[in-house]
Length: 334
Image 1 (tube, rainbow, N blue to C red):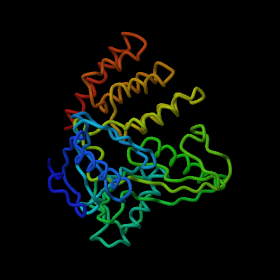
Image 2: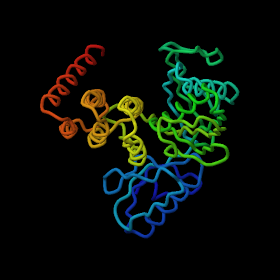
Image 3: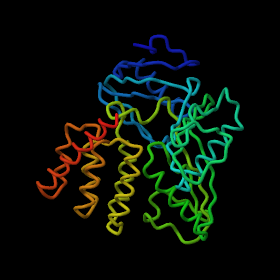
Image 4: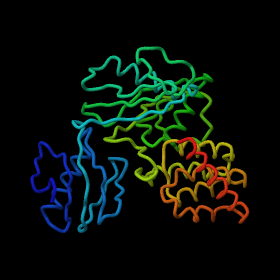
């Protein structure tokens, strides 16, 4: 069905509905999955199995065993249709300032027919890409590409004995843990490979040369499409974040800080929100997290599950009252 009936290996873009119990459909699914994994700038989106959301491995090196039956549905898209990344950057954060400078420099030198900024605003006002960025302010960028690439990679080399570089490493660490599209493609400290969980957050080593390829994934549409149209945080990324938050030595201040960064670019299920609240030790932090994550919970009808993580009925009632008050404030602003 769909593009499967007129499959053209030179132009695979299209919507597919494949019955995996049928040999041709199963072969086509395997072929398209292998191509998507191996070809830069090509991806499956809106993928489901038997009408239920299907989660695929985030890492191309992780094998996925395709089921032998079921109706697999997805859209196959390539870079030719255009890929984009949306950046909301706080320029007082050295990591965000670095990314802003890198993106502006990259697009200024690029062929605008293949790589450009569709939007560039500073504090809500149009900003000329050639101007120097200030040391503070909110920068909004929408980067677009029709090149054969599915990520932006920024190379960073930091001397961790320098305080500014150490802060930069910490901010890059935080962003990769919490931003929906960001990751460490490769990272080395004095030549030895490290990952996001090698160190105990937020303790960055006091010395050494930290070399990092920082990756931002490109997509066919924005990650943030509003509460009712955005997918929740991917299970693998959430597990990685939760492992960091589960460290007993981590203070509640640092836990709440990471959770706030997470909420800035992710939506969550009620089960995920409950786990984040349970990772916080003290009552005050639990209440704060419950209130500000309410507006980022995709299945708000199940928010009662979240409230079970709070220690008392009085606390549960207080959160409900605060979330209702926040809803009212948002309506008035709109």
